[in-house]
Image (tube, rainbow, N blue to C red; front, side, top):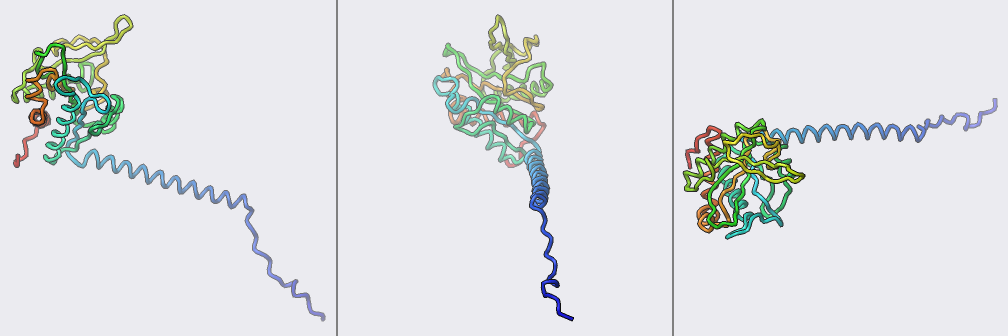
Length: 270
């Protein structure tokens, strides 16, 4: 019997997978990996948020008014110098206390729009939000402290009023005079004859002029108050509450007001 050609016994070649099927498998694997990364990112971000929000018992939002190219009111000093110094001093006091996580609306020297500031706070929803400003007037004799809590139509109005009361009492104890009836006022934006203008009234006037107020106070659950620390157009007011020492004195008054509002005692080492 003649031998067979050796080629007849050659093993069959391994079946190749069509290119389109291999690509399909790669796409499926990529999709799963992408989904896994998305899940890990969400979990990581969520964990970071929970840590950032709850690793300290209380979260305090601090807003230094104006900033960047916007220096605010100009008088004996520029308003922004006062707001940044006071917020920096208050931030230090709160962090040294150890019970507070401080969230700033912007860094010193940088600018930010009102919407950007407010959005930063609404993402975190601090227990207390304080926006620091300074006043100005044509009359150099104008002086004193006033603050603007969330208006009556807002859900956090009562908490904001309670915090405002603490602020006025502590600033008065620090030696600052209060403007108006008790230093607490409401600020509205009212549209009349096609023009929108700011309307400021004492807190005894609960007329619902509008639902629009200072943007930094909006959409917050916790107490939210904007303060006018002193008049930058009054030399004596600036000397008392606008210099480096004056800003420290105001920061200490705000710190005490935050403690009082939250029902906290001062640390034993202070």
